[in-house]
Length: 130
Image 1 (cartoon, rainbow, N blue to C red):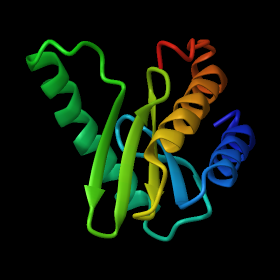
Image 2: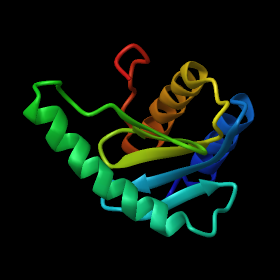
Image 3: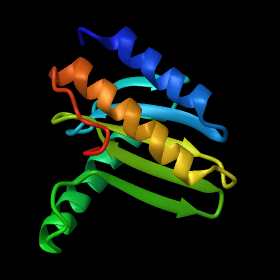
């Protein structure tokens, strides 16, 4: 990947700007890890599951007339897992603790997703569209 260092830097900035975010994984839509911050032992599994969840999210958004997939949020007993579209071929998966400010996490992850899309696709995503 040509912009791997820049993507990894963007993930680190997202984690630094958002309290309770413990890890961020950038993955291709087919489930391959592109970058992770911090390095995550189970990143491959997270990327594969993200691809599966993305497929369901895409179909659900289409079936309900909700439009193009933007994000998916899962709240578990011990925290959050959120997935954000980042251009045409990448998704960001954000792991956060149970006390995370979800609004802040959404804002920062959408911004990071737009930047990653620029790096990987060359497409500028307006933040109001993200």
